[in-house]
Image 1: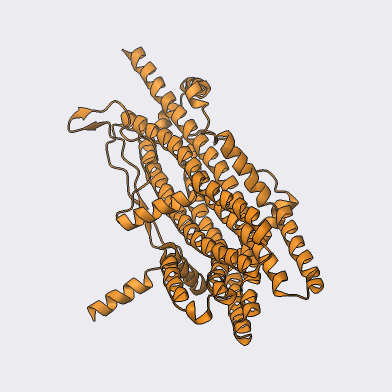
Image 2 (image 1 turned 90 degrees about the vertical axis):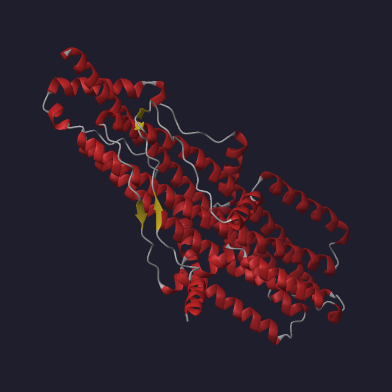
Length: 500
């Protein structure tokens, strides 16, 4: 009975977003009777996963978004285009390319899901550590006994002068790191690729292809041409999306490193002022509550994110190779593995967009709490809250894109996508899985998945733009608080020297 319960626990674990806890490294001013003259842990240090398998999988995912892999994919697409001049008219060539695309996209699907899950865990841990340190800031600011100073207009005026001087100092006017030129170029291109105009142009191309279908008699060749074109586009978009996610993740990490350095210094200065040497509190962010359908989507994503999906694909490829002699290795046989990977990839496209939006909502909520708690700190010490940088009034294109993103990310859309896959399988079965029947399970999924990957870039761009603004605001609030604490320390040193 115990083993059965344990087995059921293992089965039910995927999909459950558990509690996330974090504690900021305590900046002790003394330890073992020895004084410490500087913060002992400054920047942000990502947590290493305990299991070696997870660390290897994460390394593989990072490599999938690296520049060498991205340029290797581009080189492969260029080679395909050049060879297609000679071999592109044959069905076997186009089916082979479709298979390669479907398998590559299938693998990237798994990598992108794991990327998304890792980013969520990282952001929630960061939010917990920030909240952990805010609790210490609040406790120590309350011990400064600022009410006495507030009653003395002369001290208040002097404090404002000192704080202003600190804010004008070079180290307090520093900005967060900036991307290098190549990174900025890639970011700009991601906004072009994820623009509403690009989405519209994509569908114009699809409808033009549909419009000329009657001229080709809606033949297999006509379907294969679109399948090849959408396959090439999808491989490019997958590689590009993996690259910008890893690039933006690295940039975010450099920003967090700068923010945590200021935050650690702020804590250290407060401990010097108050003599407080109590450990920072552990903050636990409770698991978000989700409905049954969303839990099922998370369950599937967790299975894919552990690369179970790729293991299944390897098994399917072994079976596929084994049945090759029975089908004489014909075009129909070649298309089978692409059909399988394409249908699963289509479902993953729906899941990825939903996953991106839902996890982003959870993380945004926690960072809103950080902002609220920061504002409370400013109010408690009688300091003006720094002017918040806004993203600006969204354009019509941006509003339409956001609305389209919300629709694409809804749970009902994921369910509708799954039902569409069932219908495609039913249609192909009615055609006895002939070449035409299999193309039915290849071309529409390829078109839909390509669309969802572009939408995924749109959603990523929107989230990344907001995140950068939030990081700059967070950094500015930390600099203001540090300048204030330095001002209080300087004022008290002045008062102490005058009394002496």
